[in-house]
Length: 479
Image (cartoon, rainbow, N blue to C red; front, side, top):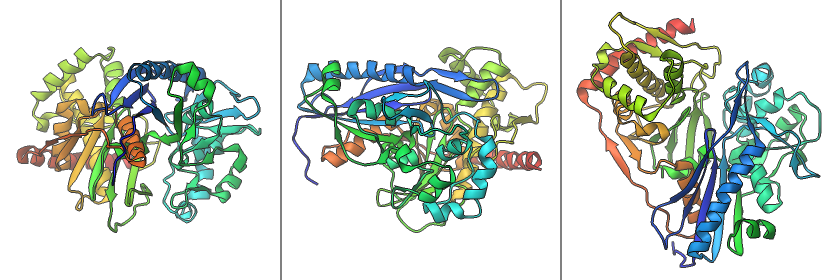
């Protein structure tokens, strides 16, 4: 493939659950992506588990980062800018098409549990293999799909329903368009079109959703002027953050992956035939197929443990101290933790599951329990891979915030009994989105390197026994 010599900058905005971030790749300055800024996302927690965000705060943070991008562009003078967007999926932003403004400032995001009332209807419409017929893939009965939110949406109005990234795209381009990955529960995964039968089931018309597109649109002149961008600036419809992260991992055949964050996404990429599982979503990806599942368990358990069990605030120093103490502990001496403080999605998709410690003894300290929490997440990921079929997986690629903890990564390698390849780029959604656009524009992608952790036979044997205990206690819990 011939690469272009044009003077181009490629940027990506990631509207995440905890932070909104922006990075830029400009090969004339650096072969790596430059992160221009991170702004904490504002979340509001309700009394019954609901979680909302504010579009005012989301747009304000995004526009502040766009100004930083303008400063970068004015310093380095590229001829063209191409901007990609990605965001957390299953936000539900009600938007007035005529005014071009949100009807309500606050909107629910994927973390919330406000869709429980829709589960029976979800099962009626999508259960018993119906999802595969309509979407070309199984869709497990999770409570946070956009489809579930629309089922639970009781107000009858003619609002336009946008993801957060779709709204920012509209602000920049004046066009209502989205990437199909942001509508993963509403589209046929091969045809990448909305499914009329599903829209009818939730009483939504096609014009109430953004058009599915995969092409660059010119940025409005007034936005170019406001942020000091290149005269030739273009923006791509918003992807789902997990989808762009898959590009960031540069997956090859039979490679497993874990995206470590507040909660985690686990799956496998195949170029050859495989047995699909009804516990995971399947869709075509880069001349192959990805099976993946989102979970409720990840680094959110660390925050829960520190805040609720220790009664302290999370800090880097405290986590370093806990990790240093936990490193000294023989894993055969930790209790077994079932990590379902918020139920679990993949592979169970059951919000009723509960958490518990088993085998606690008098001598167990906070460091023992901390290590047990790390181990529990690794056990839960192993169970996901067993549902997916671990035999063909030759390596597990990992990236994201929680993979910064070396002890946790060592535990994962030994629980999974697989080589772990750790991406040196932590902002995988940004790097994946930029690399995806680079391929489309025929530009050399940014650098990405992996470090490998090998399993240790002694620890593998210990964790094999611990995993059996984990499954035993889980079986008791599921009765």
